[in-house]
Amino acid sequence: MILFRYLDVCLVLATAPFVLIGGMPALGYAIGAAAWILTRGGTVLLHARARAAHDAKIRAGLMVAALLGRVWLVALAVVLARYAGSRDDGIMAAALLLAAFTVYLAMSFVTRDGPIAGAPASGRPSTS
Image 1 (cartoon, rainbow, N blue to C red):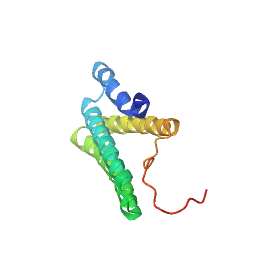
Image 2: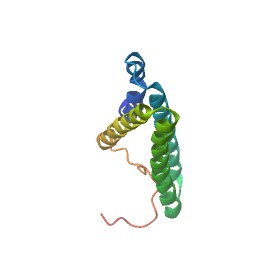
Image 3: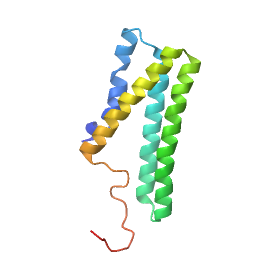
């Protein structure tokens, strides 16, 4: 189950040899891969803190911070790859991040690994 949960990270790491052997833009790949792995790890940590939070406001704030922070960092990684390297580096970073996000989204549906799964009960009765 862990392999499916982190299949996006495995995809990012497994494409490295093909990028290097194929002569594709290595700088764009490196920036995109670093951004994905760092934001994925940060999101896992923030989701864990959100699950442990007893206050709904704190839980919601952590979830929003994880979502928006990840979007901004990934977008900045594409811009950084474009201006630190070339146009091709920016395209490589964007393509890698899009592929990783697609796999992440699909696997989140398959594993049903929601961000606040296992969150403590709020003390209110369930309406379902």
